Every structure is written in structure tokens, then in C-alpha cells.
Image (tube, rainbow, N blue to C red; front, side, top):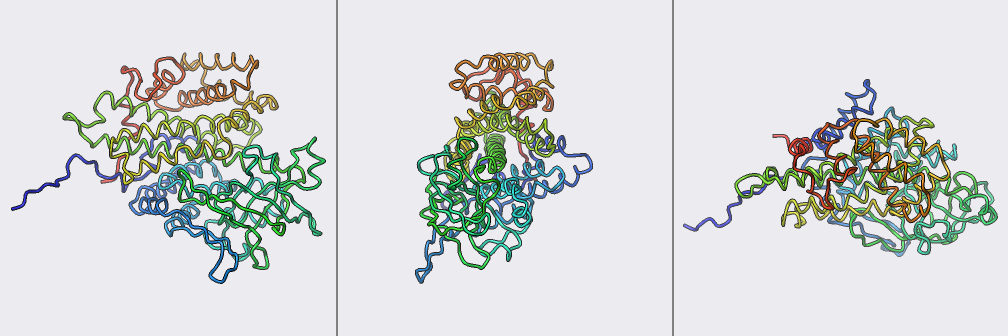
Length: 556
């Protein structure tokens, strides 16, 4: 009889068949905190349904298939006609369709719409992150289009629809639509004022044709795009305004003909591989409709940028949460030296440290979403500073958190089948998208200089927790000292943005998190008792309680 040589032992079961929402205590508590009591049962029900779908075997399979089968550009049909279409794996469409039907492009008209959408985005992104890009841009296009009530009346019902229908057709024939954005160009990058795309007016009011190129255009299969271009009138306005105009560019014209939207190539990216990012050109016949005032394009599109930046924060929180969940699950089952890895003191320290970072990111993302729902002068001013500071910090923490979580799985984490390499490749994305770190830090400075109400709102927010923790109090005092001395402030902009984000996270956790979480965060992030790497928390902290709070549990 042949000996058995391949008996598998000491391998954790897959983390599958669980509710991604209810398994996340920080997320569930944040939703309950920010949603009105009358809506809580309804919102918990919809997020629980989405969470069970995100944790299911089929959603995990869709995510792996979509990431493993990147989109393909088809510039011409078999007869030589230019079509400029992008073909996606069927699993991409399944993921996107489920997200749209769950309301992840519909926040602006529902009560508590931004909190419930942000929570849903955080949950569903854990199934696969790449398809989040068109969801984010479609959601964020709404406030920009409201600069033109006529366009908003036509497009907003389509962009907030619960029906996803792929394919390029006149939007009047579709039950729902997706929107994208194309701003940056080869020569400018984040400096959009350096762009060279030109818009020439047609005889009809507000109609133009565009000539130029865009270096990054994500989700080019969308039904329409918001783009920036320069009109002849913009040149004379540069001294007084931003010198650009905003345009809505549909892929298909009302008569059914294709608009001239030349996709030159798709980017071969580090991560986010299920999503198409393209270089596109406009050939002088590309039709577009102006949105907002001529010469005020940046001011028009900035609301879209702000909303997508918040999604960068939420998306990074989602990647961190999934990475930490996988690490917690693996170490709860994997044994070494006679006991589970999670019970080893040093591993427990690492896991607790990662869990702190994940909870702080989730709590901050939901607080920002709640500010959008409140929509008061105070909250809008708060967002003006809090969004770029949060975008700067949370997106940058995503990569080290994900890399450390991968290491918790050892060699298993370095293998594609674990899903951890996909998370690691995705982790830098949101730090680059919608303005990299320096852009966010400088935006913090811009708000400080131009909008005194923003600083007042920010200080009011963090001040509500003063007196609750001496380390938070010291950090607030240190931040005020930095804000009082603006000498050489541009070179210190990253330091300032980091401190603002950390103090804001500390303030939120002191108010809302369990004492062991707030204590550990304030001691390690705001105090001095912490090393440069994860896993250097003082051993006297309640590390086991922090780990158990964060651990996901699959349904039996």
C-alpha cells in the first residue's frame, strides 16, 4: 500500500461565507453613530445584505477573475471602423452591477446617504477594488453637474440609478449611466492649469468641439466624462479666475453616432488591474457641453474632486480592513510552537497595532461622510481641511499596513492565491489618485491661508475631546504651536498634514472607540511610546482585547 505523502495540516480555512459588515465592529458602530435612529434598522439590513455578498465565495471568485483578466482595448471593428471600446471580463460587470444595484452611486438624495454609501463602498471594495473607480466618479459627478440645472436634470437620475447596463448607446435609451473624469495631461500631471486641450465654441450656446489629449482617463467605457479645456475666452480670464472651463463629453451623441473619443492605449499598471485607465485624444470634432461658467472650470469640478478624494480615504480603509482581517483570520488558526500564532505575544502586538490603524481609518472615513450628510456651513468648512489631511495620511498608511499584514501570513501571503499580493499592489493607488501626497499637503496649506472658517471648524471638532486624554491634549497643543508659526511652512506641509490627521483620528477614537483602543492609539500615535514599525506597542496595553475586537468570524 502506498504511503500517504500529502496530508494537509495546520492550514487555516479560507475566510469565506461571512458578513463583511457585521464582522467589522468599528464600521458597525460608526454607522449606528452617524445614522438617525429611525433609519438604523433599514441601513443595517441593507449593509448586512451587501456584507454577506462581499464575503461570499462567488464574490471572491469574481474579484480574482476580474483582477486576473485585465480589460482589452478594441480600437476598430472587423470592418475597420473606429469603435474605441474596452472589453471586460464578465466578472467585472457582475461586481459593478451588484454595486450599482446596492446604491453605491446614489448618495446625494437619500437620508444619511453619504454614510450609508461610504459604509457600503468600504464593504464592497473588499471583494475587489478596481471596479470602485467608476463607482466613485459616477457618484462624484453629481455635484459638479448641478452647476448646470439643465444637465443635472438630464443626467442625475441616470447617474444615481440602481440599474447597471453596459454598452455604448445614447443615454436617453439607457436606464442608468456611468460617468468618468479626464483632467491630467502629459506635460502637467497634477498641475491642470498647464493643460493644452482647447475648446472651440459652436453656434449653439454652451456647445463646443475639443482638440487635445488626456494622459489619464479612468474607466473609459463610461457614458460621459467631465473634462477640463481652455477656451479663447479663458486666456483673458486667467488673471481673475482659474483660466479653464469644464465640459461634459458624452461617448455617444443623441443621434446614436459615436462621439470622437480616441483611446490610444490602456495603461499597464502596478495594481488596479481590473479597471481600465487610458490615454485619450480629442480630434477637433469631439463634441462637448460646457458645465458652469466659462473660465471657472476648476471651481466647477472641485466638488467632484473632493468627493473622489473622500472615496480614496474610504477605499484605503477598505484595503486595510481586508488585509488586517486576513491576517487576523490566518493567525487565529495557524499554529506554531504549540499554540495559535495570534496567541504568541509578539504576533499579538503586531496584530493589535494593525487593528488600531484600520479602526482609525474607518472611523475617520465615516466622520467625513457624516459631514457631507449634515451639509451645514460648519461641516462644509470642516471638510475643506479634513478631507485633504485625511487623504494625505490614510492613503499613505495603506501600503505599510498591507505589507505587514501580508507578512503575518508568512510565505502563504506572498502567493497569489492568498489574495494578499493583489491587496499590496492596490495599496498605493489612492495615495496617487486625485492628487498625490504633496498636492494634498499643499491643499491643507491653501485652506489654512484662504479659509479661516475651515481652521475654526477643524479646531472645534478636535476640541470636543480635550481633557479626555493627556496625550491628545499635548498633541493638540503642539499642533496649535505649529499653526502659530508659519515660517517655512511649505517645507513643513507634510508634517502639518500628518499631525492634523493623527490628532483628528485620536479625537474621534477618544470619543467613540473602546477605552483600550483609544488608549493604545493615543499612546503610540500621539505619545512617544512606539517604535518605527508595527508591533512595537507597550506590552502593558490591552492587546488581546484589541485583537479580538477586530477579528472577523466566518459563519459556521
